[in-house]
Length: 450
Image (cartoon, rainbow, N blue to C red; front, side):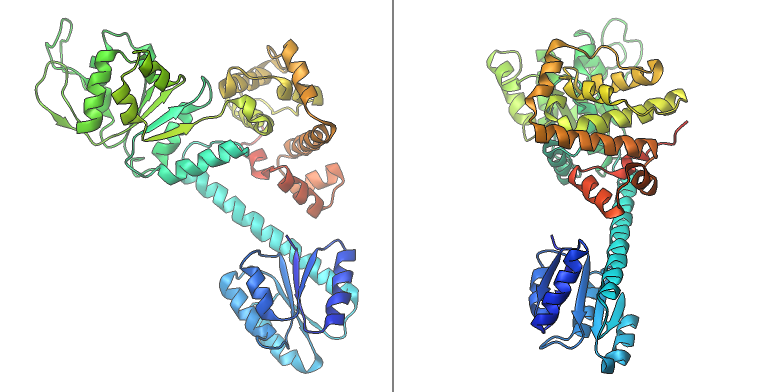
C-alpha cells in the first residue's frame, strides 16, 4: 500500500516530487488527475493525499471536499500557485492539513508529509484503541490470538452470536470451549439473563435428569422439596452443556425433545413448562463416530449440528503462544500481587518448542506457576527440542525479532516511545514491524504492574 497519493497534471513535477519523497523513505503513487485518484481511493486508502489545486476536470479543492466527506481525519496537503492563496486559505477552513506555495524546497514538502503521516498513524492508533476498549466493555470474554483460525473463529462468533440457533463446539480438552460459549452469550441479546454451565461428565448418571430438568417434591426417594433444574434456571439466557458425549442415553432422549419442542417436564410432573433458552453443547470427540458406535443418539447429533464451531489446538496456533502467555502472566500477577517479569529468551524458546497437549489450559497453568515460582516447570520433553528445528532460518529470524519487540513492550508496559528508545528504532519502523508480526501494544497495557 502506498503511503502517499500525489496528484498533479504536470509530469515533470510528479516525477521530481515522487523521487524526493521516495528518497525520504515514503512510498508514493502518482496521478495526473483527481478522477483517477478517486478511482484508486475506492480500492486503497493512503496515509496522506497531496494534490495541486488547479487540475483538469475535478479541482484539488473539490477533491478535498469529497475526501473530507469520506474520511475527515485523512490529511490532505494542497499545492498552490501564488494566485491561489485565498483559495488555499478557504481549503484550510474546509479541512486541508497544509498548503505549500510554489515554488517550494523539497525539504518543505518532505517535512509536511512526515508530520501528516505521523498524525494519521496516531489517529488510526486511537481508533483501534477505542474499538478495543469498546470490545472489552461490550463483547465479554476476550478470545486472544491473531492466527487465521482464531481470527475466523472470532468473526464467526460475531456473526452468529445474536441468533437463536443452538451451537455445537468441537475442540480438544483445554482449548477454551466454555470461553467461546460465554463470548457467544455476552454478544447476544440474552446477556442480561443467566449463563448456566454444566459438565455432563461430572454429574452422576442417577442425578443428571434431576440436575438438568428439575423435580417435584416426592418425585423420588430423597426429593423433599421441588427443585428447579439447569434448564429452567437458564430461562431467557444460555445453557452450556460441556462434554455432552457423556450424557446418559435416557437424558439424551429428553434433551432431543426439549430442542424440538422448547418445553420441559420436571421429573415427577406432567406439566409442560415453556422454555426460552439457547443451548450451546461442547464435545471433545467425533460425535458422528460415537453415533455410529451407538454411544450417542444420531438424531440428537443432527439436531445439535446446525452450527458447529471448531476450536484449534494450541499446537496449531504457534504465533499466539507468547501473547497468550503474557496475558496469563498479567492475570496471575494481579491475582497474587506480584510484578510481571520479562521472559528470558531461553524461556521463550521453551514455550515455543513445547507441543502443549493440554492446550490453553496448560499454558495458563504454566504462566501461573511462573509468577509463583519464577521459572518454567514441567514443559521440557525430547520432542520439544526437535520441534524448533522444523523452522527454516528465515522463520527463526522472524520469530526472534517478534520476541525482542514483545519483550521490549513488556518491560516498557506498552509505551511506544519507551520501546522505540530501548530498541533504537524509528516510530514508523517499529509500527511497521508490529504490524508485520500482528503485535497489539494494548495487550501489554491490560493490567497494571504490581
